[in-house]
Length: 261
Ligand code: CO8
Image (cartoon, rainbow, N blue to C red; front, side, top):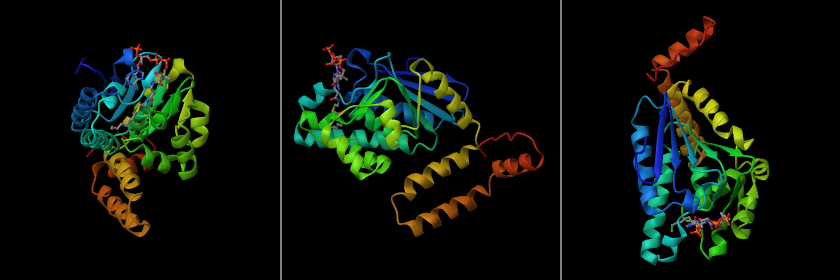
């Protein structure tokens, strides 16, 4: 289904797939694409039938090769700040949509593309993928929170090396650094992403949402408060049918059927 000019949206059961569809410019994110992405994520967030999302790029060459440099080249200081804030907002929505979003990195994930992948819950890379933050080579800094998410994902020293050299790294190196969760043969990327999405879609949706929340929010507040936050979420899940179903299914030696209630 075509939901927008620059995105494809496919829905199969509980799994939705968003494909950034500007292959002629290696799926670079222009303002319209970011806005379409924002609307698609909000729609999927509020659709109870969707339990996991896969995000990928059209074609075999690129996931997303960054923000659209045509737009960046014409940017004013005030416009640049607004553009960065708008992009950060969209990536925040992805990170905190409360459902697992799997980045299926099918090629270049550079600059804003790497930032987009980092905002996803999990990252599976094709063995042919290349990742990096090349902004420094354009005389700019990342603007979609790449300096922040990269340092949190791979540590300060490794993040500074990638950010300051602007070097592209291959999928195996990205895996070694912890920048991607898994590397698979390119031909199996979508199959493996779907397998993982199906597995996550079968989990208890409220518990999934709380785990994502606990990790995302917990990392930004002092540890003792984060523990209280976790304990509160633990108490909240005790009110769900899914908790009763999950524990009963274990005791009855059967597979749990979670309903998100
Ligand atoms: N923006 C616009 N067009 C692009 C982009 C891009 N990011 N990347 C590639 N393209 C276009 C090329 O211009 C080319 O167009 P054309 O066919 O009209 O010449 C087409 O895509 C194919 O690209 P190449 O011919 O360059 O393909 P190659 O295989 O030779 O090279 C590369 C592939 C290495 C990926 C190369 O295209 C490249 O280096 N691209 C730019 C990567 C980059 O620097 N990305 C970071 C951009 S900056 C950014 O993302 C900041 C994010 C935060 C912004 C905050 C808001 C202010």
